[in-house]
Image (cartoon, rainbow, N blue to C red):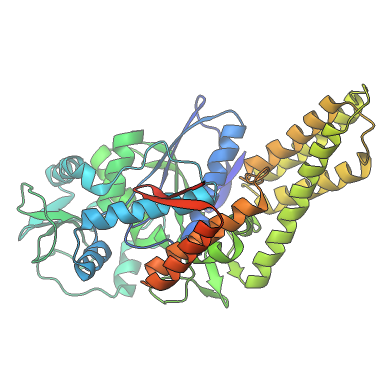
Length: 462
């Protein structure tokens, strides 16, 4: 299998030692619903994991929750709640949307605030080795102490210094140095440390949690392109200086989602949340959209493209549903073993596409060729029930590697109910409680009762 390594800027053979693969992925800062740009990254990470498991690897997948930073603090203060309450709320909302997108739960989702002792331990090690220094209650990483700084971003320290827009801070030895520990300010949460009351910087948490749950060296580190610098560059510096060894063998970065060919981001206020889009289109078309282009390429969001995704999914569902129908009506004893063997060529073509740097776009093309041949070759119930069941298993197993067809067997009524629930959640977010109550009443009239739980909204038929 070839994977593009952002550290070397080329495709390389991915051949881990043994049957286990250790992956660390940068997760969300849990102060709001995640947008489709974040969602694409999470979906690509999930597809990578699924494919490695399909190939027989045991994947340890760690994805963190950043549950303390400036955005968290500002949002919590605005709402007059603690950052812990804010985190619990949006971790629950993350799981709701991730489950809707059919993203597998991580092996572990560690939180920054649960690893303060380990963060302090790594910072202390960096100070002891001369790579960090305390200053007025904060601690900073000494960038020039790490000679390879800039190797991921492909910029030397001198180039970074020349192009940097940095604020003069008399507490730092060098303008390029970055905070590992931040001295507490009024209105901020804090923890005790050898340097006084404070909280961790953003970058240190990922270095610590990767080490804590996966060890000093991991196989793959995942993230969006926007995290290469400074976040991932700083992670590398911290981890390799603290641990004295290579941090990650592969760096795996996902391209942006654009709106009108401009990068989508919350800071530019040109974003759509997965929650909002799912209330219009459902979740699975968003998953299809995310994997319809090669993961390293940017992808442009347009409503028409999501509509095309829905139509494409319908073709895949129709193929699986037709095989179910034929199996139910089969009367022959002919197992069609030779024909089944012919369809194995599609598994080979599928793996060839995915082995070439996780080329999901080409893999989807293989699935549609597979479905087309099924429709041409198998048009009536002239084979045994077992034949149709095995053929469907071959087809669906490849679809499931991409996380698709997870709603087969779900009725359109179920999908309508979930769409209404998503609309209700969006209305509550906007504090439009009148609309939320109207939707709840509409669901009640349909015989649906709702239960708001810490892990999201559950529904059942009366």
